[in-house]
Image (tube, rainbow over all chains, first blue to last red; front, top):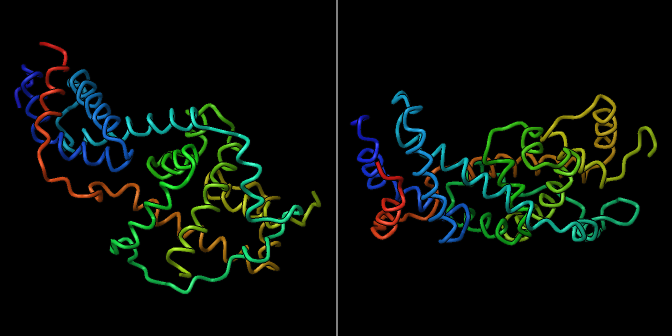
Length: 189
Length: 86
């Protein structure tokens, strides 16, 4: 790599990795324009941070780390902008009685499926993805943030500018819904 | 709220809190007592942990998305034109 000419180097990276990065960003966000913008931003950031890239890590790993940061940033924005507080209160009434006990037909039962390699199963992955896509925007964003970054919960909350209580309550609603969806379409089908 | 008795709604909230930021001593005791008498919430926790594991792998699995082997020349050209000029 010619570090004296960062322009050429980055062009070369674009050629080698842009396709992979784009399909990853598209897969995460489900939106072509957003995916393009994220990849674009990512290369601009890479170009500007070139001297920080020591060459110690693999280029692809480094670029994907930048991309994952950009994706997390996108979900943070998504979380803030699509957050509708009113839906949260009613959401739990689909699962619990007013006194907080499970509705009779919602009480969790043991799942019968104990397959351990579920993610090797494309059929399951499709269902998982569509269950996630069906969640309200900020719930999906909250889940993405929880799992995308191996950050402590406190840090995610700080970045979102909300309290930890707020965040795990949102996650609780999202999890209830996701769990139900997986149960209906897979585990107790 | 009673010192020891949680509703199922509250118990499942604590289960999610546990995996995100951890629980205080008191919350841990409350949750354990609740689970010892509530099969539904015990099942919920097991399933919640399973979903966590699945989601973690699913979301972090780089390249597990649909294969996009086609080259996106237009996008590449667009990116290159927008790079700062040297």
